[in-house]
Structures are given as structure tokens and as C-alpha cells.
Length: 266
Length: 238
Image (cartoon, rainbow over all chains, first blue to last red; front, side, top):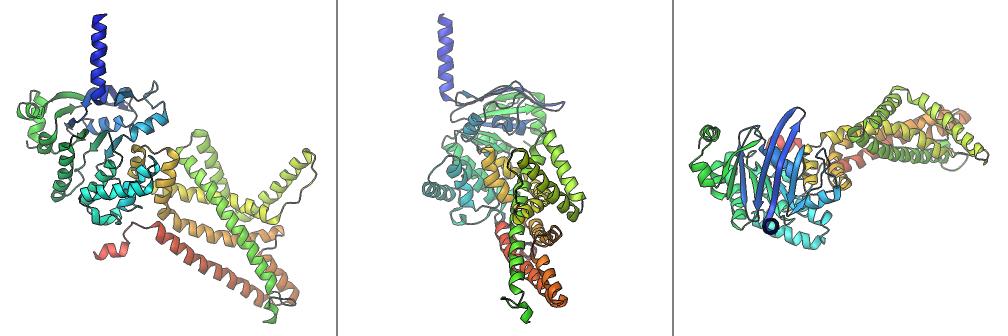
């Protein structure tokens, strides 16, 4: 009895601050099993960086969290709420999933700004059409956000006329416009020319500093060490090693991680 | 020239009435084709096996059979079926308006071509556009309305412009079932006055005017649909 109470209390405390919890996540594409049972938890304000080689499953992991990929099995919990799933892993409740998705803002490797809309239109799109915010209010907020990412003067410009770095900063403004509980960054700088990487990392660094909860899939090891509160190293669909940045980067235990860090020139 | 004057004994008025009928049918058929095409394209892309197969049969058959034959089949079979149904329900034979029949027949033909044009256009939209919309919690219909359809427009407009011009000219085929559109009116005027050259030249001019005006309208639509995309020319010189 006492033990049960303790457990319940502990669970209650944990879920209150828990932004994302992934439990025993599996994902197969046909016969290829990409994720072989991954569990992770991000508390509010955590910045979890997910690193790993090509094909390790890190992008798939991120995309399973908002069900852009349908998991094969496992559970996803967002702010204490389990995403309802059928036995085959597909979402069981469209409405619930759509509601949860509005709290998870994703920033894509290829930006994926809507090309037929200006930056301002991109940023107000979800607040106005999904969250039903009054248009005037959304525009006011969008302008502040575009200013914040240094694109205040580009509000009326279409994405195709901007550099990759500018597009990605606009995509971050679009993500912030929904007041997300968790931001999902899927290799946000991998498609950028080297000289443009810095401007995007600066924006993300600021967001980390103000206590935003983030899951960040990245190849920027230095950056991961600097901003993350927790590092996860994925190897062939499993968490091979994880811990605080200084431990993972300063004193890697797994030979595979040591090898990986060597190949990326750490 | 008096032959073309708008009031009798001139036949100009008849020609213009024929033109209005033709345009009415073309517009109706094109619109109906777009609706069929949108459902058809989505069905072919996202539908189950049964829907995909049925749509495959529809587009293949319609595009395989000459339009003139299709018009004869759909017109006579269609009116016959409607009459049979109406008699079976005890209403007796119904008079089917030529415009409605024409829209139906050509609309079904247009729908098959629209389906393929729109399917191609939807597939040409980068996957990330729809993915971003889904990732931010947009329901499927909203994704279609706010992202897929506007984004595919620039790919679809040139093909749809073609289809519209074909629709305006296909109305001439309805002459064979006795519908008084521009071509039939022209033929009657020419036969009554023996001024074949004058009237068919006039009809040709009317079709040309329609085409030129359509070109202007579709030019505008295409410019709007391509907003946000750098033009290929300036792209080169940059």
C-alpha cells in the first residue's frame, strides 16, 4: 500500500513536468527495423540532442513523435497525454493527434515553408486556420516573431527569394507562432551552406537559453554540447549511450560512440 | 455583310445565340470536369484498390473512345436511361434540356482529362509542403484547401487552359445530336443563304476571339498561381 502510494506520487510529480515521454518505440519499414525500442523523456526546459550516424534512426525517431511516421509499437506521451494508438501503431483518434500536433512545432531540414505564401502568411497560417486566432492578432504576433529572427523587413517576401538561412529562420518563426510546448528540430542546419549555419544556430541557442523544451536532431556536435542538457547517441535504432553533454562528449564509454565522434572530427 | 447583321433577315443574332449556348456548355462542362477531376485525382492518389481501379477504368475508357462516339453514346444512352427511370417511377417521359445534357456529356469527358492533369499537378508538389501542414495539426481537408490545391495550381494551369480550349471546341460536336450551338447555327445559316464561306469564316472568327480572350484570362490565372516562384528568365540572369 505505502509503496503504491509512493509510486503514484512519484509518477504524478514526474508527469507534471514531463514534456515528452517516449516508451519502447519500435518502427519498421517493411522488413527493415529502424527503431528497436527507444525510450526517452524530456522534462520541461530540457534540450535533448539526438546524435548518431546516417541511418541510425534519429530522424525517424523525431518523426514518430508527431506521427509523420507511424510507429510500429510503443507509446508517445505529450505533456502527460498518451497519443491514442491502434494495435498496428497508427493513430486511433485523428482529432486528438491534430490537437497534440499543434503543441509540437517541427522545424524541417528542408525548411518546408509554404512557397505560395509570403513569410508573414507562413507564420500566421497555423494560428489563424488551425488555432482560430483572430487574424489581426496573429499578424501582430507574427511581426514580432519575424523581427526576433531578424526578418522583420522580409515579411512580404516569398520564401523562394530568400537564402536557406533566412528561410530556416522564418521556419523557426512559424514554429514559435503556435506557442509550442516542445520544438522538434530535424537537422535544421544540414541543408545550409556553411556560412549560413551560424545565423540559424544563433536563433536556436537563444531559444534554448530562454528555457524552451526541444528535441534536436543534429550533426553539429559542438553546438549540441553547448546547448543541450542531455545527449542521446543512437546506433542502429537503439540508444547506445546517453547522458549530460560533458560526459557523452568528454568521456564517451561506448567504443561505437568513440568511433563515431572520431569520424565526425570531434 | 447584311447577312451577318444582328436582326433578321441577318443571321448574326443566331450565331451569337449559338455562341452563348456553346460557352454555357463549355463553362459548365469544364467546371463539372474540374470537380470530377479533383475527386478523381485524390481517389487515384489516396483511394483504396477498388476506387483506384474504377477510376482507372473511367479515365482509360473515356480517353480511348473518340469524343464524337462518346457524345453519341452518353447522349442517347443517358437520355434513354433517364426516361426509362422516370417512366418506371410513373412520371412519363421527360424533356431533357440540351444545355444540361451537353454539360453532362462533355463534363464526363472533361473529368477524365482533368483527373490526370490534377493528379500530375498534385504529385508535382514537393512532399514537404503537405508534411509541414500535417505536422502543425491541419486536418486533411484543410491541408487540401490551404496547401495542396494552391501549391499545385501552377502545375495544373497550363494543362487546364488546354482543356478549357478543347471544351469550347468540343461543343461543336454536340451539333450531331441536334443541339443548336455555334456550329449548328452556322450550318443552318449557311445552308439557308448559300453563303457558306461568309458564315463559317464568321464562326471561325468567333472561336478565335474566344481563344484569344481565354489566353488573357489564363495568363492572369497562371501569373497568380505562380506567385512566389522566381521566373525562369530572371533566375537565369541572376
